[in-house]
Amino acid sequence: WALELDNLADHPDCPETTILGHTSKITRCLWGPVNKSLFSGSDDATLRVWSIATCKQIASKELEAGARSVAYSPGGDLIAVGLGSAGKGGAKKGKQGLGGRFVVFQADSLSLAAEGQHPHESVRDLKFSPDGRTLALASQDNQVYTYDATENFAQRATITANKAFVTALDFSIEPPGYVQTNDGALALAFADATAGATIPQPATMRDTKWATWTCTLGWPTRAVHGALGAA
Image (tube, rainbow, N blue to C red):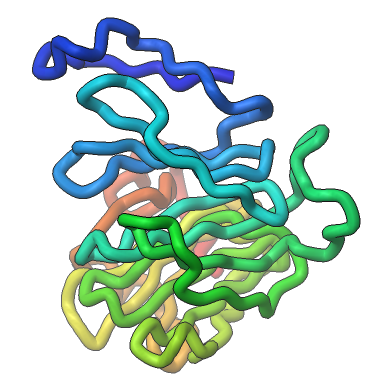
């Protein structure tokens, strides 16, 4: 399994654009701070760190199950990994029921900073809020779970705005903070990121500015996807 890299003209010491290392499907890649490194998670139950300057692996962390999502804190000091079902040979023997678990590492050393588990199905997406105070986890069980990053990632709220497995989520830029989600039923939903309450009228959120936009369904894409099945 390989990572394919493009536009490496600024890194002459990296002659290869294909990086080999993972032994099972790569599920998520994420640029590190200032694009100096690349983090990748895989069904081989490892988190790996790659130097963009040399295209070489510089660190690796064994996980208890396959990695499904990876997220950096805004300050770049923490990296969170959401776990799910591992591929062939991925999960460690004897480690069952780890879908839905998340682990948070110090980005510089990959030492464990926090961990937790509330859902028991695979993590589909994972993101930090723009202020770094909240971590949100989208689950295969149709819900989004939020955690307080300032209180050792204690659970804060459960968002039940979706009726199918949640495929992606994004945080709003401005406080008090909202999340938008997409799900397997092609629905777009919105919720209060702190209290977890569903926004009953999605149209009120159409002009909200988002810190990221990984949801493929949204107000700007209505011409592409047609009418939105708002939850």
